[in-house]
Image (cartoon, rainbow, N blue to C red):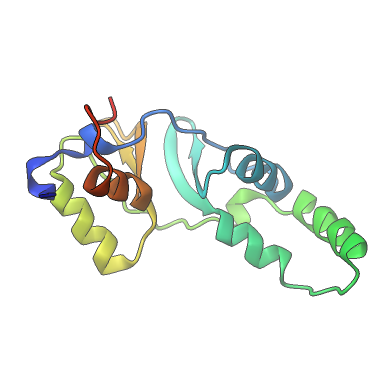
Length: 149
């Protein structure tokens, strides 16, 4: 049975993380989301996490001006997304996890705050990974010979 208190975040987190900078346009962020299937991108400046941008954030901006004609909608949304930057839309107040924390602590944070992904930083506040709900589901329900490294 899955027991989050017997695992540590570094055993479960995703270590290979795609990051963006605060001046990344939402158009570029949308391309990254669509190309790689990510749902969350840490926003990093000078090696430090300054925010998180979610695919939902970009979708909300895109749906702010409903236009019926799909071609016109795509053109207008692309124009808008090319002008907005990640720093203008991202969540700035980000809870950061440490790799040596027990997974149960992270589970509690997810449940209490309804987060979907959190950055994992080392003692120097440098990004070392990301922990998402998908990581938690994977470790709880998918039998693996080993966890993420």
